[in-house]
Amino acid sequence: MTSLIPILLLAVGFVALILGANWLVNGATSVGIRAKLSPLIIGLTIVAFGTSLPEMIVNVFSCAKGSPGLAIGNIIGSNTMNILLILGVSSLIWPIDVSRVSIRRDIPVGFVATLAITLMANYFFTGRARTINWIEGLVLLLMGLAYLLLTMLRNNPQEETENVQTAMPWGKTILALITGIIGLYVGGELVSRNAQILAKNWGMSESTIGLTVVATATSLPELITSIVAAVKKNSGIAIGNVLGSNILNIFMVLGISALITPLPFEPIMNKQLMILFAANILMLLFVFTGKGHKLSRFEGALLTLGYIGFMWFSLVVK
Image (cartoon, rainbow, N blue to C red; front, side, top):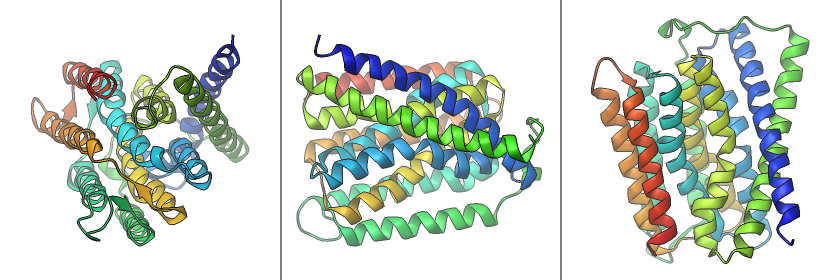
């Protein structure tokens, strides 16, 4: 009985996430058309920011309440889920074309971001405790701002030829954006909070909660948004959402979290970091194999199986 209310609230959160993701994709695409932004840029900026809100809220609340242990695990788990499960499922729905700008800029930046937190968490820069301190958090934030600036300066709508929806009237566009972000925020909060309650009731450790339950819950907006985009055959939104969210999770979310309080890092988490590196390499390998720079349905199935393996490793292998 004690788990009934959290389960019900979890279901309400799922509904809010689904509705919010659909509204946000429609509103963001409409804004992008009016601003002459490519679908990829929309995914990397507007949609990625909106879908990264749950990670931000969970980390900020956890750090402010003196429980920063979830922060790094949440981001590692979320980013791994983004690449393996979200790209995998999206590719199963509709093969994803990867643009040249993503190959040249966004995928390499994702590698750099993952490498940065690996070095910071393993006291490469400070030589002290295994933490990400406020100075390193500031460095992450500056790197994130530099990436966003570079992204906007290099926007080229002509690079992508896929069809997108017609721009909605301004009133509907603004309403869709606001309700979409609110839906994602409320849904992410409900799912994340009640997933943690259920996980603790079921005897899971804090690090495992961060890597699995919390990371899965906070990544649901990315999952639903990319699925909606894939159903609409909008590859730019689908992959831009994932790549942009991964980069913002590390640079912006972890950066802000580290400014609030030092983020402790357990050495055992290096195994999950290596899996995240492997996921990045696998994604790049798939992009350069086969016909054209795309993720096929078969490769999407392999990525999805990889995520199942990651969850098994995180839950079973201690």
